[in-house]
Image (cartoon, rainbow, N blue to C red; front, top):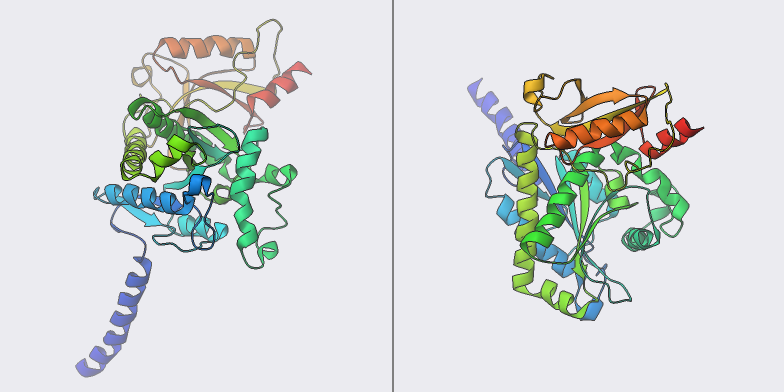
Length: 372
């Protein structure tokens, strides 16, 4: 009987070892609770842009590997890569890797290009608020699907060259937009304040690589390879080291912000209508406005002592975060005053959100409804 058991156990052990080996191929620190998926843009037969003779795919990979190597030193962070070598990875597979890992963050790293003198960093979150320039970026990054075999059957008729095709891409990511903007702000602040790089800010664009990821996601454009000095900097060892360090620190600061007390406020959205003039009454009993003051992974009692003396605090669970709101009113002018009160208490990033029938809508849509 012992001999039979031994023979049965051996294949099972071999199978288990194989599964673990396969699962760990592109991941480290498997006991960690915070999972970061790092995505080096392009690769293989897709070189990305070739501004000034530099190759985007190589720079993106080098920076990605540096970020990952640094993060792996943290025992409570697990790093997963969509690629670690010069290989082509389909856009949908990049999202699949992140979703299968149940990642807490998805960070895609790229380099920019333009036929003007444009230079500087940009960090994108998913959204449909595409101006002409943002649509150019989205089109450039999305066109990689044309390099995939049988792409028509995998992307549900999506056409990167058609602005109307991008409208539906933001729906899945709406739940994570606040966290995505928080990380994007930390990244851009590190680039501009610590490295003194020119920051072009946080942008919204309909980028396929982020549209199907079920976690906070950003796409970082390190700079323009087509700008001579910036391209040379990004192609240098020093430039790649500095940029990777800035991204690493942003991810660590993001993780710390989620874990600490709710005193750290979530970032303000990319676009807002908070500054609309108070010249007319904007009241709609079907619309509820609130002031979002913070978000945290911790659930706190909604008592004034936890919120710098503010009363009328409410909270709701959204993904892995608790969102905290101050006040609520159908009167937009009143909520503007409440937002200023939150600012005076130290919640400088507080912003207005709107709900209709308990479903969050944009402030712009709420104001249109109120004005009618």
